Image 1: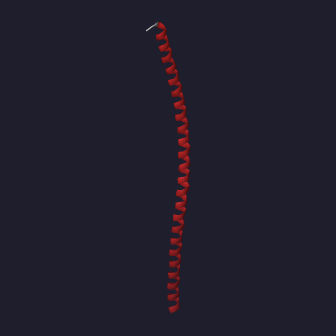
Image 2: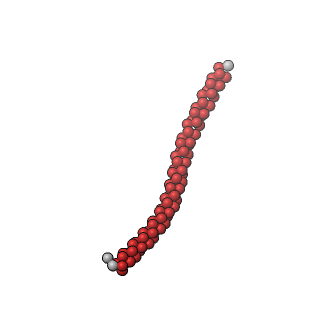
Image 3: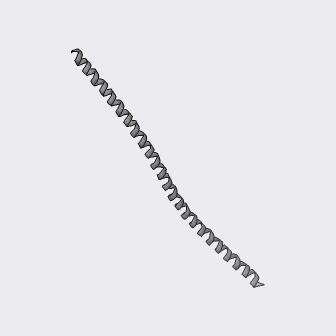
Amino acid sequence: MSETDIRDLWNAVDLLRAQLNAQNVLLAEIKTLLSERHGYLHKELEEIQTQRHCAEHAEKLRGLERIVWTTLTATAGLLAKLAYDLFARR
C-alpha cells in the first residue's frame, strides 16, 4: 500500500468515526425525547386511571349509602312499630 492509500484509508476511518459520533448524538436525543414522551404518557394514564378509579369508588360509596339509608329506614320503622305496640297496649 502506498502512503496515499493509507492516508485515504485513515481519512475514511476518521469520517466513519465522525458519523458514528453523530449517530450516537442523534440516538441520545431520540432516547431523551422518547423518555420525556413516555413520562408524559405515563402521567396521563395515571390521571385517567385515577379518574376512573374515583368514579368506581363514588359508585361504590353511593351503593353503600343506599344500603345504610335502607337499613336506617328499616330500623326506624321497626322502632316505630315497637314503640306503637308498647304504647298502644297501655
